[in-house]
Amino acid sequence: MQDLISIEDLSRSDIENLFSTVDHLRRTPEVFRRALAGRVVCTLFFEPSTRTRLGFEAAAHRLGARVLSVSDIRSTRLELGESLLDTTRMAGFYCDAVVARHKEDGVMHRIKETVRVPLINAGEGQVGHPSQTLIDLYTLKEHFGDIDNLHVGIAGGIRYSRAAKSLIAGLRKFSNVHLHVVDAVHEADEGTRFPRELGELNGVAALEYPSTKDMIGQVDAVYVVRVQQEKFADPAAYQRQLQKCRLHRALLSRALPGLIVMHCLPRTDELDADIDDTPQNRYFQQARHGVAVRSAVLLRSLAAKPARGSFGGGRSW
Image (cartoon, rainbow, N blue to C red; front, side):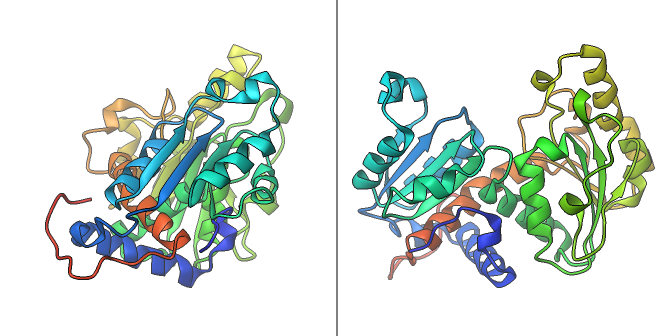
């Protein structure tokens, strides 16, 4: 049984093995219908979530597990002063795996000290989101056939985004990947360069651009993340940063052939809905991959295999 606390926990071989499981799940979902029968998965979310929580819960149900869910901190005794670690300790007593999300950086290692079952990080502060990264990498591999040698662009509030930072860490597992960035910064960081240590891939620094318009013709994929409006005190500063990162349909005419557009969602004004019906849109398919990828994560964490004697058929993932 294995934890998944950071994408750094996984080697390239681990990631490729997970992708093989995802492919198997998508081809023959019936084989896995009872792979986690008799197991209980607890989704313990101390921050709001739609896709991640529902994705893990749908995955657990489709694998035959039962789910205990805490989706609202107000439903716990934390509201009355119980410590976070006492709460997570209790959850660990009641289930076979804990899937947790929390706003604090570094909290997953503290939670792990309290639970004796596999812990899966479903989003932690600004530092990590490994299951989202696996979805992102799988989407790239499905479309391009390989991740090696790609030029990947990221636009938005990168240095504050756990999804973006986790994706960059995941891209380091592959060879000759080039990172291109358009970084939206808060008022306190305006005028600063993109941190080299954040964007460096295998010794090569990220290429920084003043706008998505300038970057889009240089990349195979553009991954858009939110410009976090709630973090800005000055509306004008938010608009400056939003406009340099915003992706809309007119910009696609400048793109390389075969470009794909990705987003971890939810989106706001940084990604226009006019891209939804274009061939470049991969963000809805990316989201759809969430159930199969998170199913593979649960199977890995609980060391489960397909049920013997089961055969294909049923609803595709």
